Length: 242
Image (cartoon, rainbow, N blue to C red; front, side):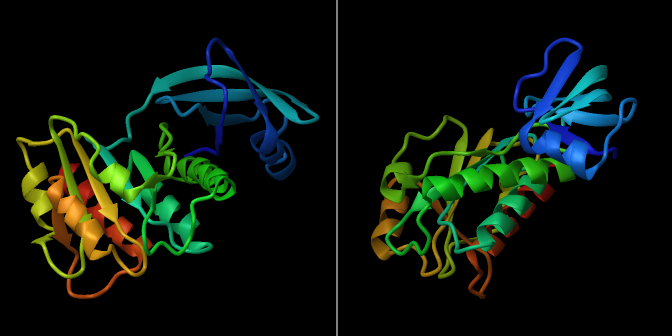
């Protein structure tokens, strides 16, 4: 796959202007010259073969050579609500969520949360989404939603064919039950899967979940880190639905 670049502006017509980090990478790191060809996407589902026309200060102008409608998404909507881990593990979590096809990531505010999803951290993770999408070939960006308190998310009205489940190390249905749920004919259009913080959800938070109709999922007898649990769940969904 050719080098891929992200346009923050929707691409319409036959011209693309890259600015900011993407222009810097193409001009200063990749050393692009007029005539070079690259792939560009705008996060809306299309991929564009483009030719470099002009390399300027702070921007690169390209001409669209071809537009392709590309679908590399899961066949259902997968939202993951997770209490973010500390430090670089947040980036790792987001990278793998993008690669595995997660549609939306909701940073959770929970009783035992160890890292607060502040605006600066969320902005960094949105940049990680772009970088991971460039690498893995997705043409739609994973959405990082605004942080939500668990009690608010827990009781939100579910879609008519939405299934909601919480990863719970102390028990519940085995995670392989997702295969039965997603096997043809698929019984749901969307999934919301929740992963708690390092210390787990409190008894009160789990009670809120079960009262609101969430099921509990077991990922085995070992206690997993947040990012491992997210990757495990996303991989199971991808394997079961594709």
